[in-house]
Length: 390
Ligand SMILES: *Cc1c(COP(=O)(O)O)cnc(C)c1O
Image (tube, rainbow, N blue to C red; front, side, top):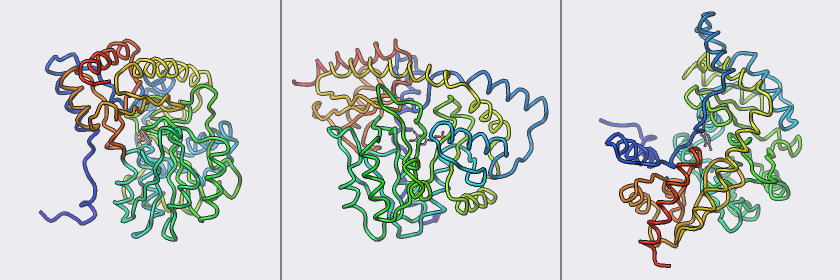
C-alpha cells in the first residue's frame, strides 16, 4: 500500500509498547508494579460525574458549537483570570478533544513546511511528531539535570534561526518535573521578543507544583507576550478526566477562529457531556486542587528519597508534574535496556528516557499508591545492589 509521505517520519510510541508489555505480564498473574502511568490515579470528581448523569437525563447528547459551549468558554476565561490574572474573551478560547488535540491544531494552524519549531529537550513525546505532521522541523534545545532542566535563554538564542517560528514551553514539564520561574522566564521572554517567536505554552500540570515553587505563565509577563502566546490546558491532569477528552487553548482571536474551522472539518465539537463535566470541574473550590497537590508532593518526596538509595540512580527532585526523571548513567546501561531488565527481572515498569530525547534517564511516575512506591522502588534498590558496581 502506498502511504502518504507525511506518515514516513512519525514513529510509534515506545511508551505505549512498554506499558502494553507490562499489562500483558500482569494479566498472566505476574506481580507487576507500574510507574508508567501518565494520568492521575484518583477518581474523577463527584460533581463532574453528577453533571454527566444530569446531561444524559436531559438529553444533552447532540452537536454543540464546534469551538465549545459558551458556558465552558466563559468558565475557561474565568479560570485564566482567577489563576493567572490573564484576561481573555470567549472568542480567544477554543475547546478541543483533549490538550493533545489543542496542541495538534495549533501546530497545524501556525507551522508551515520548512518552519522550525524550538523544543526544549527532554520533551513530551508528541511535540516532534506533531511538528513533522505539519511539515515543520523540530529543533531541540538541550537542558540538563544540573540546571534543573530549565531552558537557558542563551542556548535558546543560539538555536534560533530566521526560520524559527515557534517555541514550545512545557512548565511544569513532563517528563523532567522542571519548572520555569522568575528571572529565567523573563530572560526567555526577552529572547522570544527579540527573535520574533510565537509561543505554545503547555500548562497542563500547572496545579502540581511543589515546595515554594509557583506556576507562572509566560503569557502573564506582559501584553506583548500574551499577544504572541497560546496557552494550552485541559481537565485531564487537573481533574483526573483523561478519558473524557477536554482540552482548551487561549490566544489570538484570528488563529482561534481558524482552529474552529479546522475542527469544523475534522472532529466537530468535543463530546457534549464532557464539556458540561468540565464546567463542573472548573467550578470546584481551590481546596480540591491543593489537597491533590499535597498528596502528590508527599509521594514525590518518598520516591526521590528511595530512588537516591539505588546504586547508579540519580533522581531529579521534581518541582512540578507527577514524574521523577532519574539519571541512570551510573548503571552503565541505556534507558531501554534498563527498563526491559527491570520489567523482566523484578516486574517494575518505568519509561525509558530515550522516548523523551534522553537515553541517560528513566521516568518514574508517582501517580500511584504509596505502598506501590515503597514496594516497587524497594525492588529497584535491591536490584541495583546486585547488578550495579558502585
Ligand atoms: C497528558 C499531557 C497532555 C495531553 O493531555 P490530554 O489528555 O490530551 O488533555 C499534553 N501535554 C503534556 C505534557 C501531557 O503530559
